[in-house]
Image 1 (spheres, rainbow, N blue to C red):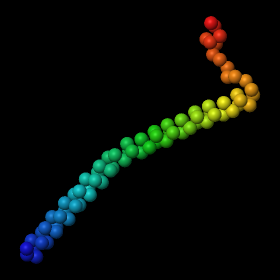
Image 2 (cartoon, rainbow, N blue to C red):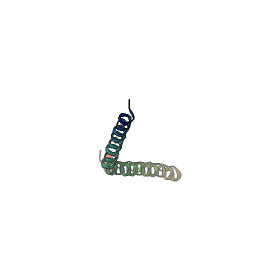
Image 3 (cartoon, rainbow, N blue to C red):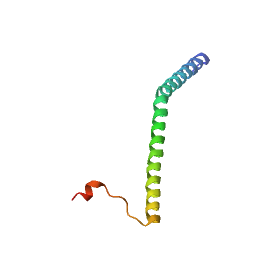
Length: 79
């Protein structure tokens, strides 16, 4: 293989690599907003679940400390 053919082959490979990098960058830029939104959603769900769990635990501790049973809904007393 001559020097010119080797240079052409190297230039062609370099162009292909640049094109692949450009395609990957476009894909990343297209998906970035969705990924950010999904991360926020997951974080919000985790915080909500944690706060609900914390509320249940604190409620149980308050009930146990007071020595009472939890209030029953009115429809249970109507029977």
